[in-house]
Length: 173
Image (cartoon, rainbow, N blue to C red):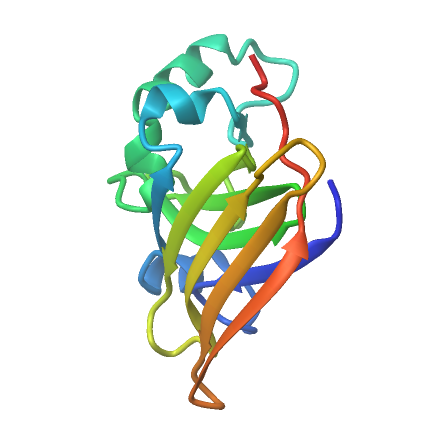
């Protein structure tokens, strides 16, 4: 992974304890582009941390892929989106499993590489300092790609915009 740009958490800067993560409203993510599950699958890798790494995860991956849009949005009945990390080359989404027990805050991680045209809206509850992110990756050609990040800084009562060079990936296939 390349340089980390932002870490957006539903608990803000508080320690990410499983209980507090689940009691705080989930982060909502809307993938405008890529627009459907089939397109998103090409750029998404899944790490189901509730299954030991030596286990066969093909069935789990198939099950998760079937619900990919629901899980990614943060509106799934089982998976509670509590953290989003923006990198120059991808976005990582971390989920707590509402049906599991234990102390781990993250039971599932989805990593989505930037496509040549990506547009994502991220909504966080009002108590978090940086909120209402809009992330756009635009590549007019293979040499020039920009990641445009718009967000609100609640403490300063300002809308901010940053532009970074990004590195989209080819579909993971």
